[in-house]
Length: 386
Length: 99
Figure 1 (cartoon, rainbow over the protein chains, first blue to last red):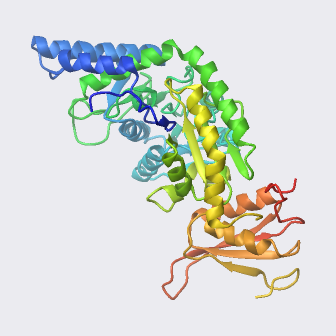
Figure 2: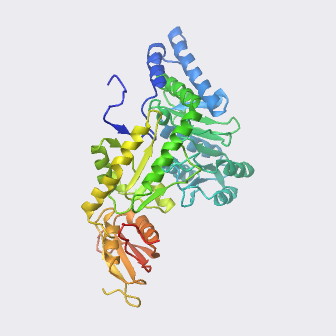
């Protein structure tokens, strides 16, 4: 594959967590293949050139996060960044306790790492429920982090499955009062909405903003005590070292999406509003997520009596790629824990995430084929009149 | 198993079926039953535990209990999910639930 030009007949609306490469990220990656191939830990000129690219990437990411350069690290993936952040921060607070407080709609990497971290220090993972919109109960989270024995709390900046923004400012105020560090997963939001200063640790996902997969971003304020887990390595956040071209492309891509964020926010929000309004006219659908406090580019809905896998196949045949949180679409039997925690339908679920290359025409294509696809899938199940 | 206001609940056995079939079977049974009837669906699909209450909410029924059953005979564990039917359980002609 030598190009990332969109296929003319395809509409790709499944850009959450893995978007098409941003052209500037791609250019940076190619440049770094030439200039940054060497091991950045070596002292010769080639190594120093690679190290300079990596340092520049850290500095650029730090500027966007509102962090100091030395507070920013790259990991091998967003998942690895979350794992390390949870484990290292919880270990750093083990004298305070073993409990890890999380919202029930954190991504699986956070939930699993929180479980392991708590188990390692004799604590438990405390899941805080969310409202029907997916927004965490800030009062319950405030209460949970104030309890004795809490090592760490984690709350995502926004939920990538349903788009709902979380009350990170309120929760961060509560964790600060309690002396508990707060990990904010910005994996679905960085590059799309302003992060703000309400975090002690933050993780982000370059693949979500059109940069390469295979690299993750993590930052921790200098005041957060961290005890890295795993075997000794000079780079505990990315044992063996991170890919310089991937990190450099991540940083350049981030700068690019932040530069036109405001214009893209308005454009994509208008398209998402149109999708949400039009989809709501299909019979028996739940359009989920907070209607206002949300990411600008994500829309999610569940159709009653619809087999999600069959619907995705129908849409794919019509040239439209979408995502889904339905168990019917996954190899696992378990439905999306996010939809389940919200108490909304988990079957017949469709999620779209628009990137910067998504056009009005693309959205019109989806809206033109969706009602017919839903009807065909329902007719196959014989659910008319139920 | 004759359900009714006072009798044992109607039972829909959807064990072994994957989403959205447990909810579809439940809705098909509910269509012909009067308001107030208790209907219990048995489901091995974990999605049913979330989708039966969501269906009930969308259709104006009430959730009336859930129970995890682990049979002694080695059959797979399943959920027993019970709803109490509301006054109007069937969709209007346009396919929308009554508001």
